[in-house]
Image (tube, rainbow, N blue to C red; front, side):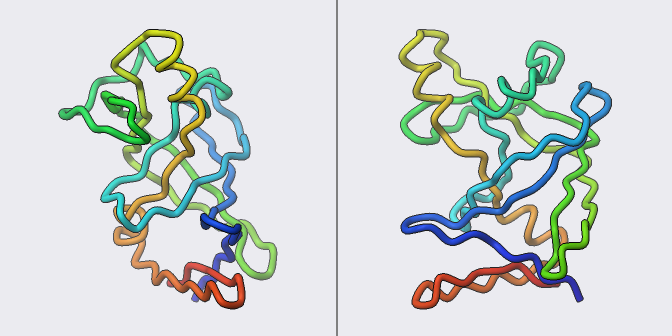
Length: 148
């Protein structure tokens, strides 16, 4: 059994991780995901993609346009990504992800790009379901974790 602690803030729950995608020249870089049980899919934010210097032009487009945080995005598909999470004992646990989406705003106006950069990366239900994670949350005690 693996238990992954989450960080509880006043209004959100975050998962700290390290991403590795050598195909895109991303060696072990820390990123944080906001756990969103209302999201069916996991997304790397536009802001994080920029920080990682992810070559957005080399990614294929997803099938649909979605709206997140009031910004319309055409998700891009990133393949063969590994996420490393720390368990409750501080050991690193690797999860291979065949495909993950990267949020790419449809509008290239500076205001839209600035707003898109403020959106968090999202850990959606697909990640939890595919890895058979249970999600526990005790807001009264600011405790949350994933377990499988």
